Amino acid sequence: MSRVAPFSLRLSADERQQLETQAGSMPLGSYIKSVVFASEAPTYRKRKKPPVAEQQLLAEVLVRIGQSRTANNLNQIAKHLNQGTLVVDEELERDLAEALLDVAWMRAKLMQALGTKP
Image 1: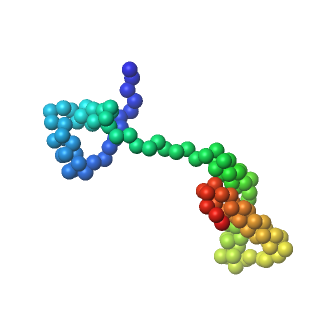
Image 2: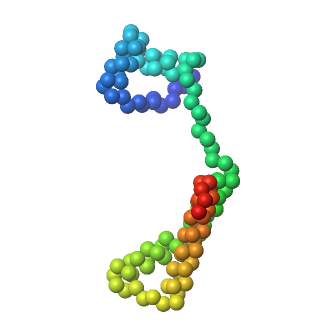
Image 3: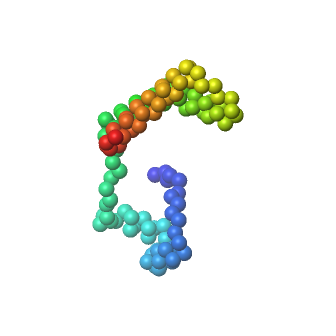
């Protein structure tokens, strides 16, 4: 049986001393494995996978972000605003309105995926 890479565990000096005391003459790694893999070792809840519907909503948001130029457009607007070269015309107003709609849509979908109400 081949072994996988070692597992590292950070302990305080007191924790390490306690483990070494409990292990007695047994090698520390062997002692830890015997405790962790004991049949009476406590079991903890399993990690929950998000429900499929939530994953689909999150996927929709990621797709929309990937297709959208909103982040780049807002960055360019902020750059021109900071430089004092921002020209507010109909195109910019349309871009801002579209960005607001995108952000509102993403917010609603994320809240829906998280199970919260807007």
